[in-house]
Length: 481
Image (cartoon, rainbow, N blue to C red):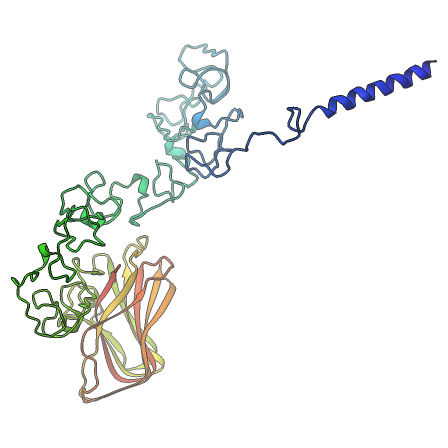
């Protein structure tokens, strides 16, 4: 009888358990639909410390190291009770060591648990509560609130970048963005674009504009103002973008609004001496046809009549590398007999009329010379998009022979190491006899800037066979057209 009762009891227990399990879904709500709670996003990082909010123990405060002294899941930088003893940090007489009783036998304001009655750095702060016990810091500065004083914290702002290489030591910026490449991170840079005008006064924060020109006086500098003259028409479509003309009136339909057209109704001078359809009054080369009005150096003289060569200056598209920031360097390349480089410093002296000169007696097996501009401060990289050299060839009274010669190469260096190069000129054969055939005009040879960081540039002039040849370098220029 006992066996039958035991069997019956086992069957009843199995039935009850089966019924209970059938009514419980995987999500615990009586259904098996997986629940309706979506997981927290893994992409949001509101404090920009590199730790996604869903795993960050202080999502609103930068703390890339995720320190959590009491292991309560709340990071030290945002934990009101860092040691987890039930007493807030502000009133805890031992904020870094748990002491819920707050015992203080000698009544000195330092709890017994951390009162060492010792001050090894003599800054007036007991070692038990000193956030830098071995380094003098009576002010106890702790920017990131991690319990380590700034003077002994390798990462003062707790952004995951050591102070030794952090471009904003006391402001968290794990991305280290530095728009003007001046070594000061954007989040703590008083002059973001490096134009010598402080951010609070700069009318174009992210584009250099030392002159702060603002035609329409709208407090937005012209270089970053989509409507420079403030007439409601964007610069790209405005037929007079420097003079307000909301009506865009253009009587002669020449694409130039009446208010800035010298000849919209016959009142101006329509003379077009060179017949290129550009009136002399606006033609940048009125005596030589140049419909495209090309002016590569932006000096107001068209390329076809620019008699002072390619111009580099502070007011044009390209700027000279100055000897205040760079040192000139030069030398002989390969096998080159009777070769030399004269006056290398003239390449960066700011004077277009002077020049460094590479002299070649007889160059064999890729022989020649080079002129370079080396950065004095190698931590400052060149940020412009085009680099180049203003060059010319002097005429000679004798024979110049270039066979597989005349190859010019721009080389890019960073911290003294070559990182890239670009060949910008060359030819299989060039023959000058008694000065005939020499290209004595100044010209600009340039290359797109290397994609690698670089702080110095060099121009090589060399070839396989090159006899009795000279080559001049007037300027070293950089710019962003």
